[in-house]
Length: 133
Image (cartoon, helix red, strand yellow):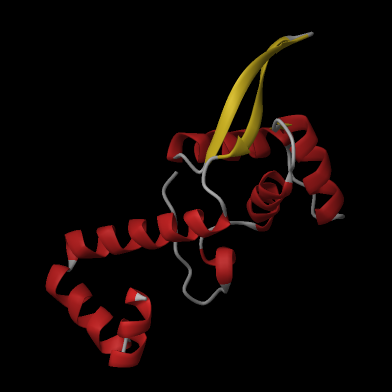
């Protein structure tokens, strides 16, 4: 799933829609053997209230996150055939690193020297030394 960055937003809103953020938060907080798309769908729509989202949108997002390694899944047999139970692949911190790596790799490919200069300019010596600790 290609990430679209909106630098005017804060936190995960820079790259995800509200229902996507809520979906990930639910799965990260879940203490069990995973959640079905139906469970995620119902819980997210409860949080969103009047701003509901379709189950297809939830399923597409969860599957895209599995493709990225952000989520994991196991398939199980159910009445209708097979279904996925989604669980944490990367925790919240790991996902933040994943986002930063994707952005930086993309920038380095397109603007290698400028990206390195921008990183150096945006971080002073104190900040750089604290990153290595």
